[in-house]
Image (cartoon, rainbow, N blue to C red; front, side, top):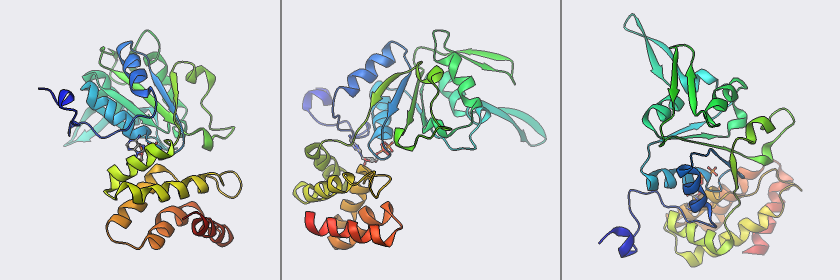
Length: 267
Ligand code: ADP
């Protein structure tokens, strides 16, 4: 009897609770060799989703957290000095292409502009990665898939994803899970009983409603999991809420007071 038939989760597959048809869409994209763009706020489950799908599909995963100094060479590779010799060392994108894995570029708009140049030939029907430095032209095998993510909330005029790049991807919009589902996720991840997670999720949603007024970003599912983890470990809920759901959101004393007030009213 397979694990699926027993209804038990496979411990080798990272836990991910779907909130829509995103798993089916990912599988279609993978089987039809289409690159995928995940849009959504930080901490809402994008990275976990990709880890879950890579394990389900049995593909190695190469995750890169992009930052503003990240160049194309960081992804493709470079010659490194090793004991007097210069040796070519593959970067994570090149490894994913060679090994037929999934390459996930998290917050891709943060990276330097030359990164898009290496992504373009991989995201159309050529599916090739030219390595100028080694003179190779790698053909991506069927198992290779490119997934990128970005947070539209952080967009600025300078740091957008250009239409010429974004129109090469099919896109999935991510949101925080609906309250019922989020309470289950937080309980599963933290070990805190679900009924004690429900009010935390209610508070998170009250704080999310303030986004755009006094707050740049609302409480992420990640912060909710942290808060519940602290409470499960024995910390007083008031203290845990302040440390995991209030302080990370603001440095302004007035705003902090207002958020604490929201917590008092909501809980
Ligand atoms: P993102 O990549 O969007 O910034 P993550 O994937 O790192 O966010 O999610 C942060 C945390 O939230 C995860 O480590 C996990 O604990 C939890 N999480 C969020 N959504 C889900 C989900 N649908 N199923 C399981 N865990 C989730």
